[in-house]
Length: 242
Image 1 (spheres, helix red, strand yellow):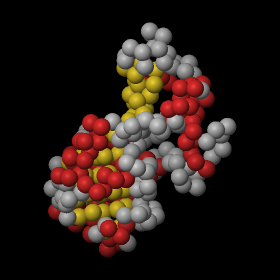
Image 2: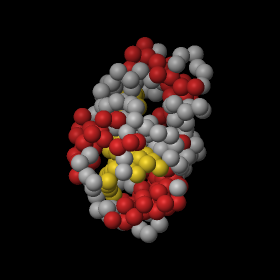
Image 3: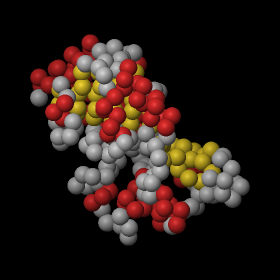
Image 4: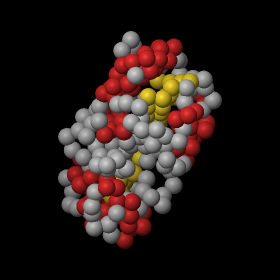
């Protein structure tokens, strides 16, 4: 494993245009539950399955149940950026990181100091009235009753992509452009099984592909370097010279 970490450090030092594509594993080290692990949301018991609750149909039909789950499990309080978040911010500050493409909605990359971030599934930090479009912060939502209402009377929806909703095409286009420009693509903390996000790897035209995950992924054999360990440990080691 030490040899693999040393190889990752070497790749980071030599690269000029790095893109990091990350999933839930980046934030689980901050204490935010993922969806598919043993302790993830899919393996916890609710009145309705999480994938049902987090659908647009359910949101429209049963907003009270949606927001009860959303406030309990998606608005996680008291969490701080993980070692991985901080390492990526350091990579960007050093002028190495072209962009972060993330499936996470928690805003922890921004909290760590990163700026060039493409959030494929949106963010809990942004919320908009469905009637007038007025913007609200996460703090605004947390201070409101169960189903948040705008001053105009409309329901305020978190700017997160629910099941049955399309990804933002502008965000996708920017993510694809960044991946195409990169000379090193680091994929971390994602099973690479959720589409269309997982398909972004097909746009990589650079030399070095690295996958860091606790378990194998469908693309592990395509990677020049695959590390099955903590994403925070690996990235923290990789940026020690920056």
